[in-house]
Length: 87
Image 1 (cartoon, rainbow, N blue to C red):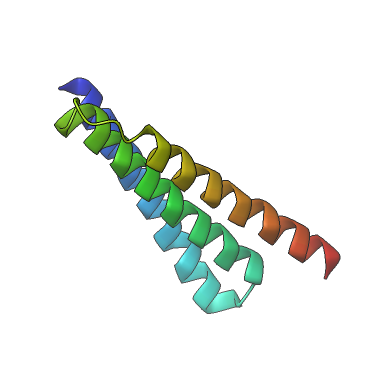
Image 2: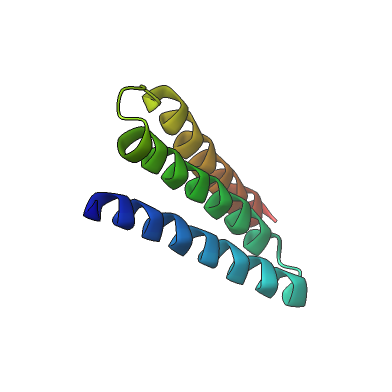
């Protein structure tokens, strides 16, 4: 029960960070803020998948989908960092 609350809070925190990054991107138009926002949306999806996998459907194995979501999110963030360093 407490684990589910922690997973949900992690997802909410990632979504809050994504929202704040998007709001700041709208004001500044910095591409790095946009890359970070997209990465945090992916991390929030990853946290939701963790909640579903461990909390609501413990018999279902979503580890591959969770891993791919987290990996794609990190690749997006690293790509944005490299892209902005080269600009």
